[in-house]
Length: 249
View (spheres, rainbow, N blue to C red):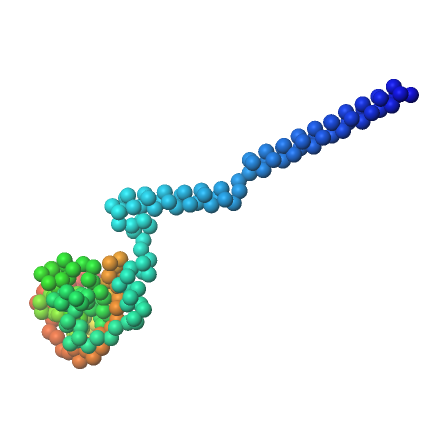
């Protein structure tokens, strides 16, 4: 009987040791499985490393100018942020004339179609002695279209569509075959298309300064309604740019 009891005790102890061994093995496997998984902190570390590496590459490739590959949010530019806080400007032509770069304590303003843009970031070009200083401190929208930088420093677009209307060849057979009514209808069509061309040209330059990474909009010109409606003769260079009407069938 004593031997039988000893055998049972030995079997029980061996089974307990086997069970504990299995449990330890399972726990070890579960721990190893947890170690092999990717935690949330690992993901954060990888993302931070990629961001830092990208910023470093941008800083190197852009010659120390940008950490975001040339992208610079408007709120990171101090003059833009200041103007946003203060609100848009409303300047008369006389007030606007002070912002031509002569007074170094004031910014340099350029106007297209009544919209004022701050171009102080490029003082070498728009400041005194710069190639395009004549554009500053005034609304010279007409000159942006015609290219007459001395004659057309005015906001007036009066008669400007003429530079896009084709010149008729009065001696051509096709021209002689048209009636006065047909010529009138054609003229009306030409004027509509030419005015569309003018608006497109003005919009192009307005968008150029509005979307430029160094310039920004600051306000509007007020009190220049008479200047905008003033009659203005088409400059010589604009007349020479007029296309000739094609007379072939």
